[in-house]
Length: 136
Image 1 (tube, rainbow, N blue to C red):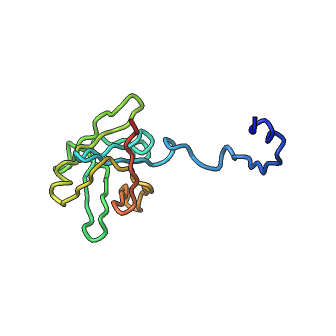
Image 2: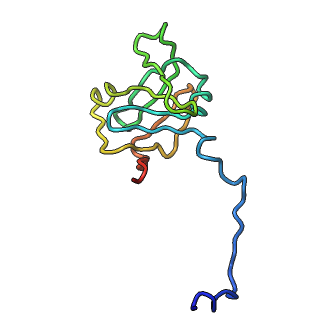
Image 3: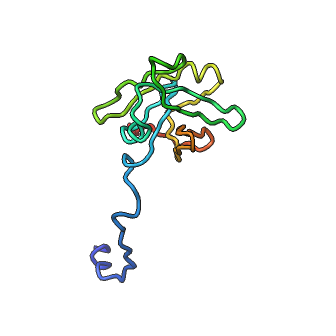
């Protein structure tokens, strides 16, 4: 009955604005799993020009992965972007990237702030990640 007694308590309600933050799938989004698979959203893929493959880059000094749009027929080191899921996401198999540069993660991580630089490279900072695994 204690709950019913508090029904007329003065509350400090704050309204949540609808357009203040973009939806997760309407912004740049990428994850990396322990097997080296980099998964990007359909929005991210389209923003980068919807290439058929990507060059995988790594900055050792800053621990940053870069994805540069490429064409598999032209670029020798291009990794194909394969379909992932029902909503247009893409998967790039980056196992070799992880082994070549010693990238070890224990669980799937989401890159908190994905950014495109002036050259059109998607910047994925390994120092700014969050756990992305779903709870079971």
